[in-house]
Length: 370
Ligand code: TRP
Image (tube, rainbow, N blue to C red; front, side, top):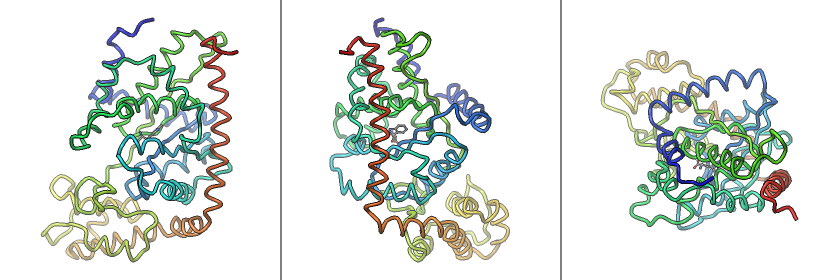
C-alpha cells in the first residue's frame, strides 16, 4: 500500500463540514443508546491538557460525563495529556502542580480510581513508541490539512509550526489506539483527530495484516460528541483560562460570588432568555440552569424585573450550591498530595501494562518480534 491516495486527506479536512458533522451527531446518538444496553463493549478514553485548573466550561463540556460513563459500567480512562503542553506553548509552567490539580479535579467530580484509570501519557513509553510506525502511515499533506492543527497554529500569533504541532494528531492517535479505546468523548474540534486515528488503525491493518485472523491489532475509535450547550466566559467572550473569565472548580464560594458580581450583562432591566440578542444575560441563565435552578426561561421569569443584580445573586447561589460537594472533596484531596501521586502511579502502571501488550501485537504484526 502506498499513501498517494487523497481520500484520507479529504476525510480529515472534511471531518467538520456540515454533512460529516451531521453523520457524527447521528452516530453519537446511536452510541449513546447502545452504551446503556452494552456498557461492556466500550472502553472510554478522554484526554485533558494540564494547562491550568479546571473550570465550569470543562465541567459542563465534558467532566460531568466521566462519572456518569464510569457508573454505567464502562471502562473509563482519563489521560493527562502532559506532552501536549509542549505542543501548545513554549513554556511548561508549573506542570507538576497542574497535573496534580487535574488529578484532584478528576477525583472530586466523582471519578473513582478503583474503577477508572487516570494516567499521564508521558509515563507510558510503549504508547509513545507507536509514533514511529504511525508516522509512516500518514502523509505530510494530510498533516498540513488537519483543520484543527491549522486553527491552533493561527491562534499562536505567528509562531512557526513545530514538528510536534504538525504531528500531534498522530500522537493523539497513539493515545487512543494503544489502550484500545473505542469511545472518545470530544467536542467537534477534535473530530479530525479522531478521523486521523481511525485512518491510522485501518492503514496499519492494511499494511501489516491482522495479527490473528480476523482480529485487527487496533480497535476503531468513535467520537461521542458532547451535547452540552457552550458556555461563554463571564465577560461574554469565549471561555478561556488565559482570559480569566472562568469560575474554577477549586475556587471558594466568596471568590465565585465576587467574579459573578463583575460578570458582564446589559442595560435592559427585565431579565429574559434570548441567547441571540442578550448573550451575556442568557449565558448566566444557562449557567444557573445547568447548576439545577430550573430551565433558563423559568429562572428569567423568576428574576423578572429584579434586574442583573438579582440574576447574579440567583446564579451565584446555584453555582455555589452545585459545586459545594465537589469543592469539599477537592479540598480534602488537594491536601493529600501523596494520595494524588499514588493514584497517578497506579494509573500509569495499568496504562503501561496495556501499552506493552499493544506494542507486542504491533511488533508481531510488523515481524519485529525477536
Ligand atoms: N487534544 C485534546 C485537547 O486538546 C486532548 C487529548 C490528548 C485527547 N490526547 C487525547 C483527547 C486522546 C481525547 C483522546 O483537548
